[in-house]
Length: 252
Image 1: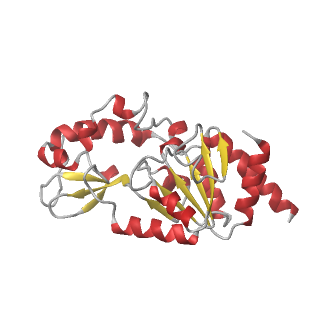
Image 2 (image 1 turned 180 degrees about the vertical axis):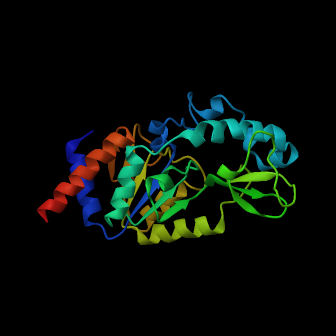
């Protein structure tokens, strides 16, 4: 990682009026969660069809077998890493105003981020496909699949966005508001390829926002909208960035 670039990014964040963070799967890799795409991604092991909403409604038991394994037996055991915690600390200090994440793993929330938009939903809760009753996933047994609503007996669905579903109005509205409010957007661990989420940093840039990107390798943003590219693991780069921000604060 380039020390001069880190210092420059820290100065931008320190001097900003409104910093919004936008994260993708790369921030959770160091918590043991693989990305969905790529040779080592989840779609190399599982058929994406299991997360198609039409398939879910037609074959809920088959869909839930994979959902349980991917999101509850595996992802549900993950814990926030240092990058999640660094962002939560920056929010607590008033340096970060909001976090928008594409991830459904609940790790930003567990780390302490509060003004948080889980753009693609969360594994934290389930909703009944019949009566709409919402229940914490932790309170539902997944021993017998598919899990069913205690009130009406209909199938329960995880509260994340399936293929074929729309982004919630609240999440879309929050994200659009942030593209107007942010003067610096810190983009962490995303390839910039998933629609419509990938449009968020682009809209922010069009509105005059400065883009600071943290990624292990160049993304779709790096040569198009990124102002400062910090290459490296999210935990390593954000730790250095926080230390640089603190040094600037001490000098003020």
